[in-house]
Amino acid sequence: MSSSKNSLANKAQAWSGRFTEPVDALVQRYTASIGFDHRLAQVDITASLAHAAMLAQQKIISPADLAAIEAGMAQIRSEITAGQFQWQLALEDVHLNIEARLIELAGDAGKRLHTGRSRNDQVATDLRLFLRASIDETAEALTQLRTAFINLAEQHAAVIMPGHTHLQVAQPVTFGHHMMAYYEMFSRDASRLADCRKRLNQLPLGAAALAGTSYPIDRMQVAKALGFDGLCRNSLDAVSDRDFAIEFCAVAATCMMHISRLAEELVLWLSPRFGFIDLPDRFCTGSSIMPQKKNPDVPELARGKTGRVYGDLIALLTLMKSQPLAYNKDNQEDKEPLFDAADTLLDTLRIFAELVPHIVVNVPVMLAAAEQGFSTATDLADYLVKKGLPFRDAHEAVALAVKACVNQSCALSELSLAELQNACGLQGQAHLLTEDVFALLQVQGSVEARAHLGGSAPKQVLAAILQARADLAG
Ligand code: ARG
Image 1 (cartoon, rainbow, N blue to C red):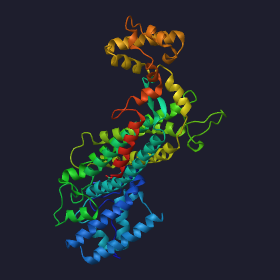
Image 2 (tube, rainbow, N blue to C red; image 1 turned 45 degrees about the vertical axis):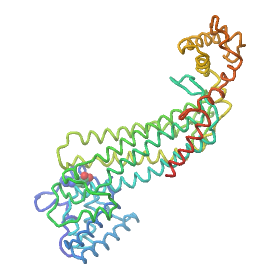
Image 3 (cartoon, rainbow, N blue to C red; image 1 turned 30 degrees about the vertical axis):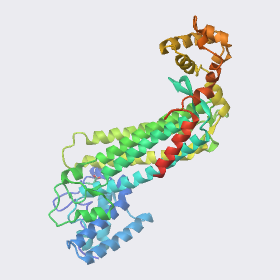
Image 4 (cartoon, helix red, strand yellow; image 1 turned 120 degrees about the vertical axis):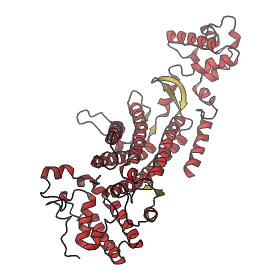
């Protein structure tokens, strides 16, 4: 260990020889990021080790220096893991805290670590490494959730429910088809996430403060060691770019928007007025005053948390707006929104991946609801069109029949053939309606008739499930 004065540990007194008075206490607290960026500690060490190995390889530091740095970092890692590391506000951020401890442990070798780099390219590298790991966990959670939708859809491929437009009963669909709609949304999120990862996976290190460095560094070696696909190609852009964080938050916001739509439907379906589904008690909470209540707190909270992730995206966009090149201290403010978006999204996806397989479907209630609201009226119109009536005339004929049924408080299928012909006002064309129409007025017939690709017929739902399983496996 070196006996020379550790200027980093003395930073509370002065930044460097250039300063003649200590940093004001309030300024110190205001500028410090250690309260939140200590989460980058492990990736910071990983990146430092790759940088040090490259410095040794390029003969910028000696093999002995590298060994001392590696030993020091190993100890620092274990101190952090054991919760014994002393984070100091006076040392401002995670980078300076770790470097100061390394210098305590490794002396001059520790002081050589920062050769050819700056905290500007260091923090950009750390953030990318951190976010890459978070993206990988999120992708895994998305796969679990997508699988849960596929399984639920398969169980209920032929279960009929009312499809809604304007939250009014529109046409019967199957619950399986409805679940596969969510599979589609979350699959697009997975693909957006993978796309974001591709652009993120470029190494900023080597850009140093902004202009690059005069040492004979080998950036490709560092990139390979850290699992990056390539290098950030412009040093100014490397240290000032936060697009990857914004892209991630945009993906997170979109995915949370999908979650909020699902959450909203779960809340509606769970309400006794719908009664379409039930959830196990462990996903719900009670009321402190109303003993009868079983509240869908998880979906409601997820719906609410969507707002904070939108906020994270807007915070980052606003943070970067109008920033001159290259690095500015503003960028220190990127971490909290980014961490918040990553944490919220991952927790939410994990909890929904747990919850979705436990949705209990109330089949008779869904079926009864699908039979209300003249949900097969379009099928009757289509039937008349197939018999030669122009669609607009068929639409009008069925509208008249619905009006008659509303007046008599009955369903279309409850009319006799003669009553239906009469209600449709088909002067002289009554022969267009024959007994076979009644099969189509049943919700089962209506659903089975939509047997094209992307349609709600159980056959098509099973085909979509097959395709989805193949996509997930590939
Ligand atoms: N804590 C800083 C951040 O998060 C690290 C980079 C600081 N660089 C500087 N030149 N002040 O952005």
